[in-house]
Length: 154
Length: 274
Image (cartoon, rainbow over all chains, first blue to last red; front, side, top):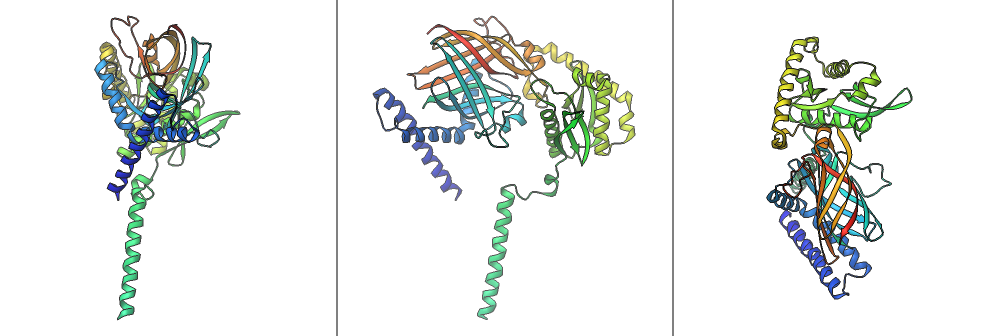
């Protein structure tokens, strides 16, 4: 059962990755199957799924790259899905750091971007434990912060 | 005979289902061993003189009542943090009253257990209580010991406390001397209170930007942070990669020296070159 489930996860991951790659090529061709609403839903779901599924691997890769540059954060880090809105909408993964018990609580990173003209920009990043602001348990997690972001335009 | 067989099959099926159900529940964490089910500390909010306070309840007794926040944390969040630290220690191995100590760390009275910081007394705590920081720390320790069933001997052994303080002072000085070489991995138990400040940020990569960033982290780490370097690149307006590095030297070109424990929470910048 576990092996079968794992296979399904790999297949779903491959489909999602294809969606992301397809998106890239469609952008270059200025048209494609992922430009519509459904395509965007697939893209958001696919990237979110990929980040959730392969977060530890992505985290390890980022840490290895930063280690090579000598700027790795030495405490606890984790990669969670990130959403950015303001100057366009983006979805991807964000590496967060902080106190271990606080990092464990973080489920997503929400970024609010404020473009002021073409040259000035402002940005605030909120590690949160839920994406439902109305939910009783929703709250920004203090004691955590963002160290790296990789995201894709929706 | 057939009826007997049917009965046995029913019992076997019921037993199998019960076994699978129990195993599933244990796997999901619904049924845990008795020790794991007991939670030592619970935090909750309270009211003192019309103001919100954070309370840490140990074994149904209020052990600590926090009236002041610290850094970006309010009193309730602070109590939540204390409870989670106590529970983590207790989950590793049952926490005993005799393991709690008051020590001095970086000039602040701090409750410590098994080398893990539980809570530091801030100047605001002392001001609200109208007492010295040491007196407040002793009160908190007494509250925890009372709740945990600690003995008067361990509470009143001033000579032991004094010795602990000296040992920690020496250790703190050694850490300061180590400076940048401090290995945070070996200090998983080091959770100082949070502080925020604004520092310059420079963005390199696909564009050259300068601006201001808000950093947060432990007070002594944030004090060391002088700037933030952001490495940014993008691919055809489709994908973006950003790496935020709080640094402690302004000589960015020569050497990027990361400040551990500091992260960026917000930024605003201006593109000099695009």
